[in-house]
Image 1 (cartoon, helix red, strand yellow):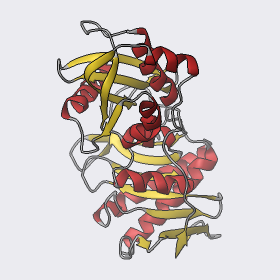
Image 2 (cartoon, rainbow, N blue to C red):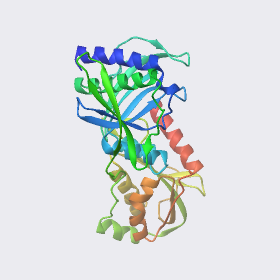
Image 3 (tube, rainbow, N blue to C red):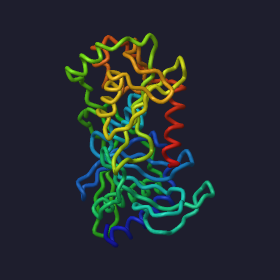
Length: 333
């Protein structure tokens, strides 16, 4: 971004923090911001009520609303949100040493938790790790921060319902000649947008090889998730099969897309592969997952293989613990 855009964004970020909008709304209060100057709109969420991160996230387009709504209703997981989201974010994050491509300068700002913080802003593009903002994106984020700060300072933020039936609360932004941002409230009906993953399909050859495999008398627990790391500049979709009877990892593999990670599971079962110290994979009687998007994408394929597929969205503790420990391990590397 150019110097002028960066300078405005830094000023807008500090004004946003001084206005403390998280005292008015939590991150579950989802409202629209439509920047008429940039021609962008998105679903805004204020971070800070939990006292951990302080900032503003704007998930762009109608898909941004659908993704965040379904996340709130536990119909998608954070991995799906990360893979599908197109958004622009600002955060007062914890200060750590080293280079950060989306840090807004080197100034250290005290946070409410007593830790030193730094201003950061980034652009999230579906299927890619975060990147720095360009000048136009920085101007869009500045107007959003200024508008939310103004609403908070005037004690208007969170005073009306974020939804009116099927319509969503929007603040329409326009920039005055003075440089100030004007907001106009309205409710808007948005078109439904499909989010999630494309259904996974087996090739005829792979289907035949799987049907020829012996049956595993027990059950596997399946997770397809994105750990907080990138591989070769892209998302790292990890396929994890857990065998609850022996409490072992039966299969673990990473690919660059959801579809490729799902394919790796079925290829491994067809070949009888396994993780270290685990018995060879076989076609199971049952597969359980704790992710509704995974269930939706794979249910037809597993039905075709006469495998009972169960979705327990309340969570599978052993599977969740393995995901957490694997993510922590990868972050430390």
